[in-house]
Image 1 (cartoon, helix red, strand yellow):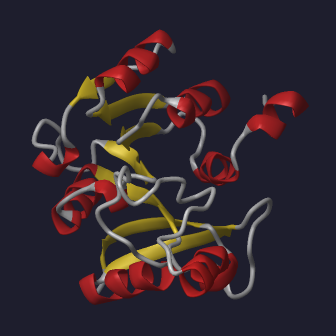
Image 2 (cartoon, rainbow, N blue to C red):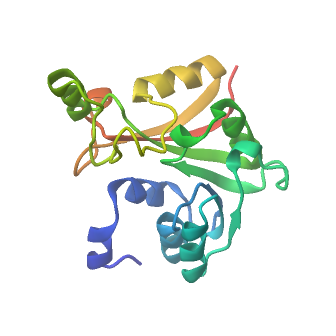
Length: 204
């Protein structure tokens, strides 16, 4: 059970994902970083957790947390996992960093019954202001990198992702939008910093 102090330290996007994932689910976290989200899911939801990460330092931090994490590049696919091996495949803040989005999402939806995709919104209002008034690439809490050290390869808005899913006939089961401190209910493409989507199979 999350105590009040711990609850206050949970980032808004992690809190949303924590609410989505059911107790004792099997979870594969693609691009799990140093394991904060995966560790939280293990502690609070008793999930069966597996992570994939390419950064050696982050993997060491995951191991220190007692997490099972493999060193791999998710752009190369997930051939070691069978169809529907996990209840959830999570890609939180990692989709925009992969080279082949089509292939990675296809694999995520193959090995997971559902996928949870969290993306930063490059059309967030503060990002728009920085581009318009300063004429510079935006730096915000959800986009904390300078142009010369960003790991992001794709710069998309929430509307872009929704449009992509429609084009590829990917079903969006749930969509949650997070602002600076709380969830965003209206004009999400303008006021949300992060979008979190629960997606599944291909629709008709």
